[in-house]
Image (cartoon, rainbow, N blue to C red; front, side, top):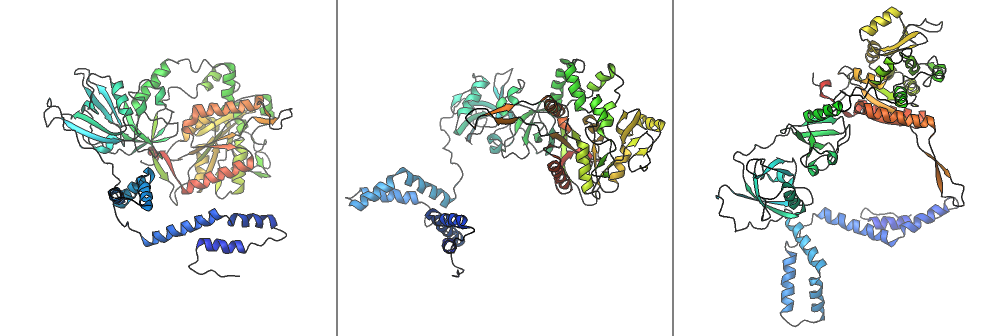
Amino acid sequence: MPVLSEDSGLHETLALLTSQLRPDSNHKEEMVFLRDIFSERSLSYLMKIHEKLCHYERQSPVPVLHSASALAEDVMEELQTSPMNNDEKELLQLLSTPHLRAMLVVHDTVAQKNFDPVLPPLPDNIDEDFDEESVKIVRLVKNKEPLGATIRRDEHTGAVIVARIMRGGAADRSGLVHVGDELREVNGVAVLHKRPEEISQILAQSQGSITLKIIPAIKEEDCLKDSKVFMRALFSYNPKEDKAIPCQEAGLPFQRRHILEVVSQDDPTWWQAKRVGDTNLRAGLIPSKQFQERKNNNNEDSDQTFSTCFKKKERLMYRRAMGAVHNTRSVAKPLYCDCEGYFNGQYIAGLRRSFRLSRKEKQNGQNEAKQVEQPHPSELLTYEEVIQYQQQPGERKRLVVLIGSLGSRLNELKQKVVAENPQEYGVAVPHTTRSKKSHEKEGVEYNFVSKQSFETDVQHNKFVEHGEYKENLYGTSLEAIQSVMSKNKICLVDVVPEAVKHLRTAEFKPYVVFVKPLISEKRKNAPTSLLTDEIFIPLDEEQQEMVNSAGFIEEQYGHLIDTVLVKEDLHSACGQLKTILEKLNTDAFWVPVSWVRL
């Protein structure tokens, strides 16, 4: 077999490899396919080009001259001064082609490393109406991005004033335009009597260089300082739908749970912010926390009947989403685990979702309305200041909270994860007032307590959640969660979404996982001669309820969720959840600053 030398190139290696491909009886088609691919001329040419580029890169080449385009102009001029033969005519024609001339200009730009834009000289015809020291001519280079400044008209003088400078925009990067400057001309067009909308249109349509004639503010604003304040958005915002924003084009759209870097809070109404992870350096306008709260208050005033105007079907959907629906089927056959909490022959303690089914179910009317009131609209969801947090070795593990919609079968998922690694994960042992059975042990299956003791703990807010099942009380206590965490285990607990608010403390630092089943419209071949034709099978009633339940929880409690797990089957969901749990030990996450800065 031929041996390659150290100096052999890629194309030589490829040729040798091709010659060694000999089809055999077992892999004849594969070998023929590879030989045909490796024999392609285009592939060989690419290999040679790659070798040449690597060779020149190792040599660290320098340009032979820095002005090839000037040399080409001299040659063309020289050729035209005397009679030309055929070769000289062909050379002149080549040098005159726009593509070659453009290539030479690019060569000179790279050779001279002259990448900065070249601005034309300032105009000589500056008006004499202004004092020499009071007028400032600013020339900016603007591409397709906005200029990054907003303007307003002074109510008393009628002057056009720079209202704000967007951080990271062209105006901000120049350092030549400041808040309070009076704008007199744009590209030689006087703007004194133009509406702000017309001026903005002129600026938006300008490309390349923009010349601004400005009267500086009497006292120029100091350069804005980086605030480095990060906020988690608790609501979604679209500036195109906000009539209050001073400039829709300057607005920054974002979705709930996006992390925003607020770079300026100078304006009490409109902050400037950037989405973390965006490549766009220019900041955009977002409503300030105070302003958004005022807007939320106005919305609340116009919808005071929120908790009493649910239709019967909507109330049923809500109660099912909260795990609080009582019906004969769910009591007789719990949806989330068997009646004793066994999984694959092993018992794992945990408050069963079925216990919640009878939670105050004997009370109707007023109590049903109270349950609907849980996601109270007066909770002003605006922004939450956050900071990146990474768990340190030896530090107590974060609590993992599972919430789920109908059909998510949280207890089953939780049990499987813990059963596979009981040394790393654990669940809180629930309390109950029922009698202990012969095979049960205190503190293993349940903490068995008296009804009086249970009710006393409820009054002292010692339970995350609690409920009644067949006249017995069940509940998950804070102490039970703390007991698991004190063993340096990750404690998994599934609760109704409303209970998450009581666990969001620096002690637990909960990571909230929203589990919802995968529901999709099925397709089948239509009964026609075309096999590609398909028709949709609509969702049945149960599937539609699952979709509605997931949508409702996302709408009402989406701001509390850290990640969403779409459950296709138990095995894949278990794998996804374990991946999430492993990342909690290694990755950094955004958490409320109050959890870290104590």
